[in-house]
Length: 318
Ligand code: UDP
Ligand code: MG
Image (cartoon, rainbow, N blue to C red; front, side, top):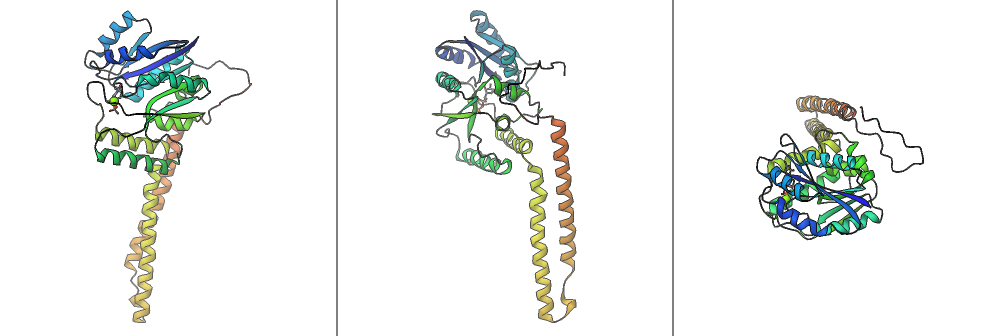
């Protein structure tokens, strides 16, 4: 029987855990061996207590608790590591607030059986949030796609997804400390599919995100998966270059009009020239920094999909 490991990050979710449990168990159907693993991300409320009592009455329930709040990304990583240890055939990541509808679980598994390694979910319609947040969200995906050249990123995809064994291993092989999961999915490749669903409201409690957190997360994504910082001096250098051309043209025009070489104004040209050199130097410095970062991140150079080479035991002692 195939093992399915459901990872559920929770941060201060005492109001939602039981509601989630009662709902999700309805969909743990079919010929699978299920585990639901709550990851308690340093909650300060009764979340852990509730997980423990559920685990006591239902053997399929597992939990894992952090010493403090490490963020959802860390919780997802820990959950997938647990899935690997449990030798699960696939893992499903989902929120506890029922915004990731459990009724999609059979559909996710069906896509898995069809051979997809990564199955995402996306809301068909945007949530009832403000127009401004919709605007920022859309702009983010546009800018992100541009700077990372990631055309395929499931635009607006939620973290609710299924990863098979290969995708889990690939995901875990990326040890970035500041994790941007959507970028990691794009990086690992494999066969990916998106399932759409209607927006669902939070079952209880409140969102753990705010504008500041989301903004930092967006910047993180672009920084980690693109040459984002190089764009800043690059754009600046181009702007200064056009200024230089303009000032030179203006100088020549003035000199011709006055019919005198002395009417050519060198001052703006000097300033433009200096800034141009500065931004070009900065650009190369940022590029160097990028290379150093990539080296220290120690991301895998490639991710294997298949081979008939003999399996080598992974060196865990690293
Ligand atoms: N979460 C977490 N750690 C955090 C923040 C959130 O594990 O630091 C969990 C949270 O408990 C929930 C999921 O991540 O299960 C999504 O959070 P939330 O519903 O607040 O986000 P939104 O749906 O508003 O984007
Ligand atoms: Mg939510």
